[in-house]
Image (tube, rainbow, N blue to C red; front, top):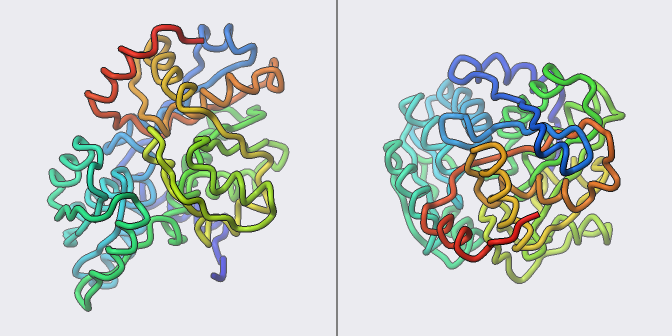
Length: 323
């Protein structure tokens, strides 16, 4: 895939998305910082209309598609990308179909339907749902890949523009790494504005496709991606974001399921924000490598807050001791 994505595309996306959303807060938390040993900031992407950073990309993409008289779009999702596309389609008056795997987060499913999208359940995981969604494409519906869309990445990258506006002296940004759009967007911005900023991607140990590919300098697919962090549950790197990530990222680390669950609780106790699994991995990573980050200005992305109630109750009941 030819990567023609440029920094100017991010600036153009900024003009588009701020017609519908506002910049999210970047907050310093003294309690977290005291424990971690660095100046810890949380970027609250969970405060966006769909409680996830994905809406940035959806608005940017659908605004452009609406100008091409597209009647409808179809995609696959574990929830946040689907909500983003459904919400943005509703804004633009475009029909939308979202394919999710069986057993998907019921609250994410309900949110997708609330935005007037058609919800279709198929497959045992995201990649099976994605393959099926591609088969449903007709002349009336355009397929939107969850990751290989330049305008999705450009929209998401506005997150990092906001970080640098609010905290120019940031040293390190920790981001969840699932499909890769968020990390790829951050790389595009920091390369242009301040290449000294370190970008660290965080994966679940049970869904380590990007981590293994980066370590081995070769694209590696995993057989499973069974993690509580459903936003990270992909078995492969995707072509467009990986073309940006693999040669430019400073580090990719993995965190355990227990570390993710403990970080969900820690975020709730210290920030009073609910984080889904993917939204908590940045804190989990910050805690894991805090010895490397001592006294630095570190931004941890709380990428989404769409954790269903039953899962949250289970985490609270089984994780009494947290860091």
